[in-house]
Length: 106
Image (cartoon, rainbow, N blue to C red; front, side, top):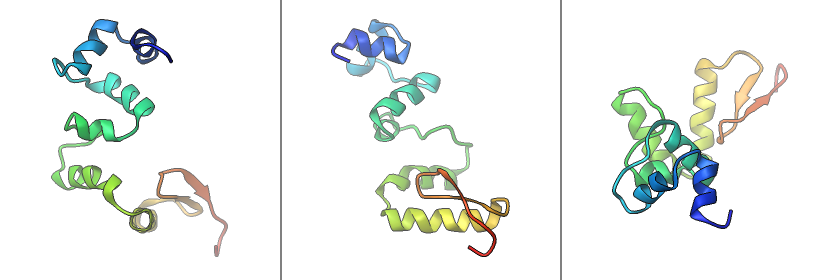
């Protein structure tokens, strides 16, 4: 992408909307925010002081905001804890949230 207009098309918003975001006149929300984060990375959520789609649970919001400041080892440990408590047998996730398949006894 070489221009703001091309970036706006990629995000499926008007050039005017993108300009308003860039000039702090408005904040992207909903699908627009998610598309922006998909292209620019998860720090976008912090910049607009909004977590990715989460329930109104304060504990979940705290984890979401802190996640990217955790070491990869800490993220992996958290994912292992979640997997042990909720994932079906044989399905596990790595720290990036991607599924990995394990065999029995692995």
